[in-house]
Amino acid sequence: MTAPNPRLLLQHLYTGVIWVSHDLRIAWVNTQTEQILSVSASRLIGLNIIDLLLPVHLTPDRTESIDTKNTLPPHQTSNGNRLDDSEKNDDPHSIVEKQTPHLPTLTEAYNKLQTQFHNAQYYQQPFIEYNRQIRGIHQPLDLHYSVTPVEQEGLPYFLIEIWHGDRRNRLDKEQQLQEQHDVSREMLRSVAHEVKNPLAGIRGAAQLLIRQARSSLAANSDLTHTEQQPTVMVDANKLTTYANIVISETDRLTKLIEQLLGSNQLPEFALINIHQPLEHVLLLTQTQHPSVNIKRDYDLSLPELMADNNQLIQVFLNLVNNACEAMLEQDSNTLSADYQPQLTITTRIEHQYTIGTVHHKQVIKVSVQDNGAGISHALIGRIFFPLVTARANGTGLGLALVQEIVHRHQGSIEVASQPGDTQFTVYLPLTIVDPPSASG
Image (cartoon, rainbow, N blue to C red; front, top):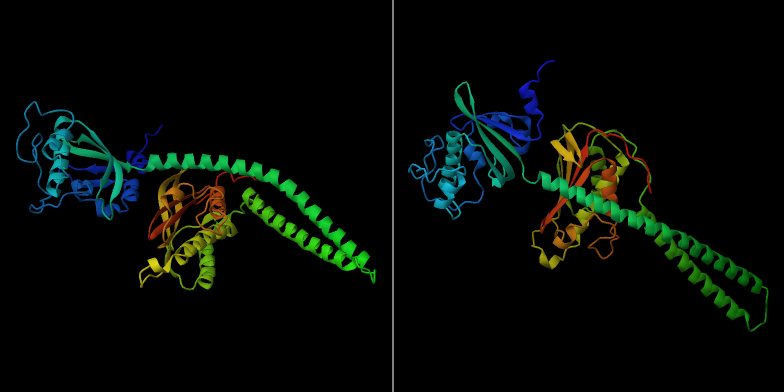
């Protein structure tokens, strides 16, 4: 049996792997590292790992700029003092933390990380940092990382693993929300079924009343010169009017219940370009909301995916309409004079992404972003539940339907919001495994 290629194994890990030389320069990274940091390997190789792992929040540094090529001897602190035996322990963090209990400066943070690396090498003791917000390359990142000192051909190296700090939390939250959604959806289906049957009876009775009223009008139309004829005609007309109101309201409730029950129509999967349904929706939006400025940030190299084009139109139409209404319904007195409603649609490929319990090598990411008032903190956790809405004339069913369609495509949807920036993000796998069956 042939032994696996170690580098091939590293390229298929869920965590990022960074190989760092003795001078703390990055020598090699795997594909997942490129995805986590959103930087190509060619740009990462040669960088000082300390610069990458520096924390975001620092006190302004009044010292001179740091010479990133400097290194410290193994068991030596940043102030040049050697550690005595009482200070040597398995936790290199405590040494520096005693010296800098305040928010560190850039110099202090840099020296602290250098000391950690050198102590790890000197004692051959790996260390792990959890929930660290690092500078990264393009933007700050919430990460966990571990540093393991190793030797190869007599030379010291470091093996660093990085992984998203919010990955496990995100997966747990997604699973919990999905379970809550399924339970509430099932309860609503049960109630809707129970209400739908009596509504049919009410509508039938109202139709019989209309027929009876029309029969009374016809029977009395032949009568002449009687005092009762005007009264009979007025009563019959009123009866017809009231019965029509009953039918109209019953039809409205029936339509609402059908929305609650959801569609049993299965997606008709076919290979499509994700920009087809998006452009269809944006063409409608330009007509309906001409005052909204639409910005397209497309990755035109995205591969095709298996999806139902019509159902994705429904998804994006709901999201885009909600975004436009959120921007246009704001109180004009609270807006600046130069405020311009802006809708931004972004498409990207996301690598090594987990949806539910399935890990995908690639998924398509579509973001719908607006600069409206935002979603309240109290509402955002329940935004995908049926009948939950902040709008006076909203039914609270649009986003519930969006989530159901996305789940039928084995995808996921997320929302992040603050005043002036709300973003709904849809993740769709390129292929569908075991297409869903009709239920409910």
